[in-house]
Length: 476
Ligand code: URP
Ligand code: ZN
Ligand code: ZN
Ligand code: ZN
Image: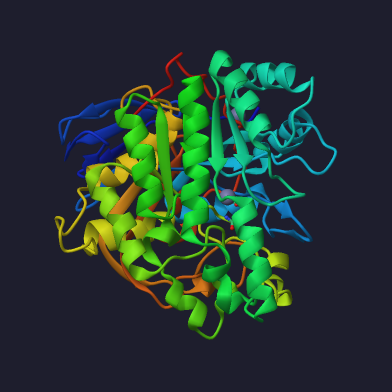
């Protein structure tokens, strides 16, 4: 076990922002935990180190609910390990990641989870894991029971990627039903595979299957259809369900309507679907933007972003997948063979803060900016809640782990891949001018990043045991 204790710290003079409130306060830390939030200027015991946060926001470190580390799919493996991914995460103000234990063909969900869990100790910050079920057999219920008991109550499923991770409806129903009784939850990627395969086949006959045609090969209605089907299963079972990377307002609205009917249903969006649009597929390097679901047309992006303000989006993840340009280019002529996914664990918080808190890019029908409290809710508190990690993570209330992003809300900078730390040679946000970035990042009360320098490279990452759900499912 690494040592998580160290000298006491006070973060002074900043504005603390939680999901529910923000106010000037000093944050006292000891033994790796927040011990008190106090009136500004409260005296500290001798030997307490001080971090000056004047003019800064003091935020709970970000919790990224959707992050693929060293992810193998098809012929490709994304290029990072826990050390690299979490180094990039902390530079971007994220101090907890939730990764996926996706079984390789023939591997059981439990074996995949145990193999991936062993890697957490290489991280610079803590991590949790979603398990994953692809196919049903008699051993799955007992595996799910032990996974939930072992701190992995969330289980990823896919309605697409045939031959890799796609599960059929029976498997989804049985997994959801079993998890409901165990206090677990299915976390699901919804795109109707039959519609996508048929669309891809027709596109390929017309010679429209290269990266520049990505958006057309995975239509919005495939997402809507699959979300509706999975919601019907969840409602019939009264089982909680979490939809990952929802990319259209229609999909979000289906989930919101089910929530209004009483279902414990969560919507995650990811940063690139809220900011980037499918015009990038017409640009010089369309392969760099190939992800599933694909980037959508601008009106769809704006419609999705509108739900940030209405509250119908529960969490924002990154869907971080660290492929490099050579990997992305190698199969660019056929999206069916390409590595899907974009690097983003480091840029998630700065891009979302800049667009929606500092810059005010929300559609004109809504207030021009999101309050910083909503930013914290979407990027830290709700991801922690949805993953059984709250209130240890996602908050700075006394007792929480002292994972903190001291955030400069006025810093203006330009995103360039050379200045980032992800294990790749490009960023989808190359050249983008943004406002806001972390100045000092603490993990377990230790300063790991300050002014763009890694101050503590020691891997102290722990695999977090997530708490199971209440019978009706946790809800924000
Ligand atoms: O394109 C994506 N999103 N790749 C990663 C795997 C997944 O579907 O989340
Ligand atoms: Zn330790
Ligand atoms: Zn996915
Ligand atoms: Zn993903």
